Length: 170
Image 1 (spheres, rainbow, N blue to C red):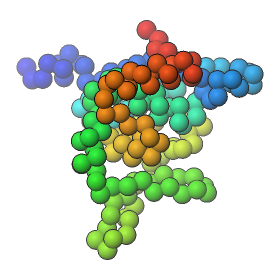
Image 2 (image 1 turned 30 degrees about the vertical axis):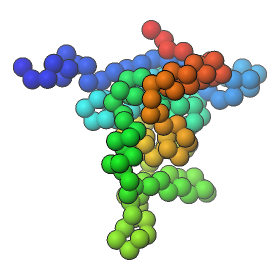
Image 3 (image 1 turned 120 degrees about the vertical axis):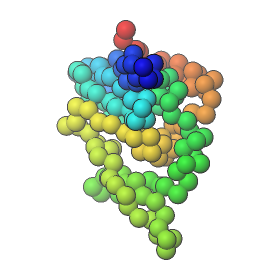
Image 4 (image 1 turned 120 degrees about the horizontal axis):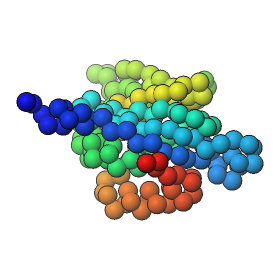
């Protein structure tokens, strides 16, 4: 019969949400609408996906915060394990044109680029994008969005919901 979660189809968790796409004081003034999106957590592959459904597309930091505060992702993603597992990996950032790269330390002590993180930090024309565990860890660490305890996660989720007009849609 195999794994019960695999059999029941619970390896994917989809969460619908609404959030202010950028500064909550400005987006309504500019005539923009709240973003309706989905966060899809793949428990088997340890990936997290943002899918834009309607409204104004949010800025990258808002999407990363929504991902970091998702309780289903928090149950799959372990920041302490990633810290130990990816100790030799790093995030390289190019300013102009902006691009984010995943790299590791080479044998000669210089960073070696492994891949570019597609659609980051600008994903204006993208309807959906996925981050692996490594990509999410490096980006969340860079933006100081890693959570090690559920207590701070709950407190920050409430603060984020209040300021960014965030809510899950059931």
